[in-house]
Amino acid sequence: MTADGSFLGSDTGHRLFTWVKYIVYALLTLNVYLFLDEELAALEHTFVDGFSPGQIIQVFSATIDTAAWVILLLLFELETSVLDDSRIVGWVKTTLHGVRGLCYVAIVYAFTGYYAELHTLYQVALLPVTDACSLLQQEFSLLLDLDEYAPLDPANCLAAGAELYRLEGFDIVAGRDTLDAARWLAWTDVINSGAWILVCLVLEIEVRLQLRGNLSKGIMDANKFLKFALYGVLFAAAGYWGYAGDFLDFWDAALWLFAFIFIELNVFEWQYETSHAAAQPA
Image 1 (cartoon, rainbow, N blue to C red):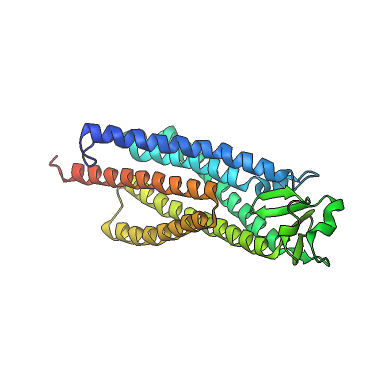
Image 2 (tube, one colour; image 1 turned 90 degrees about the vertical axis):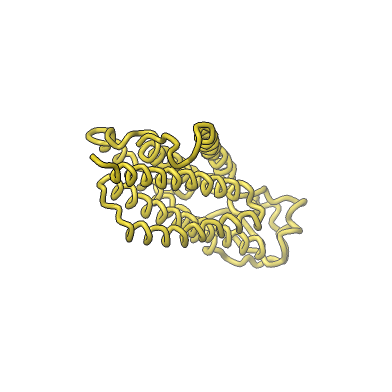
């Protein structure tokens, strides 16, 4: 499809829309590095003796998830805005759908990683100590927040609280309040990831039916209802990250919601142009 501004307005407005859109896409690409940096820092306290191939997704779930979504976003951009419908045939169509399929696999794989991290936070044992300072000689790490740790030392052991838990399989301890806060954030990760998968499924159905010319008004109305509910969940997740002070997740969620507004506008413009062309006399 070619975006000629028929729905989005003037050429100047369309150029501004395009520039803002690609700046958002670039910022999302930068987030891949930011999540990788955060997860590498966490790795110094979690899988300190190494990890198996099956644990890669738990270690790098956010990095893999974000990278796959960035690629998927660019593919949707190609299909709904950059490429003309007549070019999405043959090997081009096969390549787009093949790469997109791999991205879906990575996204679902990342969802299992978020769940594994949530499960880990519930596999804990109450330690028979009255304060964390008694563990200073045992080289424990202290859970500060989800994916955030610090070496247990005299400066932070008193703040850990009297009720102390150890994450099974790790030399990591956490106070009750910190553990509960991390669990809420982990639940938010799981719910957010699942909601985005469903958004993508709805959008995929919409794009495929549009290419086939089978996108009826009834299907469009049903998709709008589903997407309204799903985006509501995603806005709530972003709001919770902001409330909890998790800036990177809040920033990333806000950018993704902004980015998918562009994709939705692309689809809306695409549908407008298709219906307008169909209404023209032969």
